[in-house]
Amino acid sequence: MDACNNDCKDVRSEMLQNIMCYKFAINDLALYLDTHPEDQKALCLHREYSKVLRDLTDKYQKVFGPLTIEFPCNKWRWLEEPWPWERGMYSDVDL
Image (cartoon, rainbow, N blue to C red):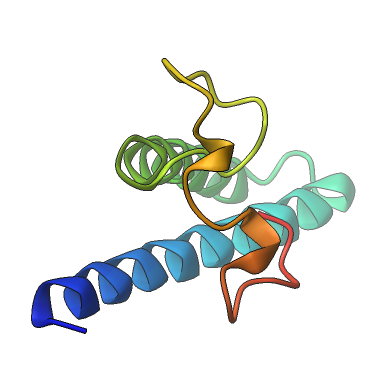
């Protein structure tokens, strides 16, 4: 495998890791906000993280293909590469 493929895999892995971290943080903030709905700092952080997650997932999907079936694309890209559950270390993670 050449350096370009390794770099691409590293970028892809890092992006997936960031997406998972932001999803976790957003979910955790949502649970907190269930009991503290007036916490403006938490609300602001939830909005900020949600925006970052949207940007990250859009960027990832434009480069590497859809993470979910809801992502619109010009052609049916599910068949081009391994299915989401066949991608190695992230196979058990619901992205």
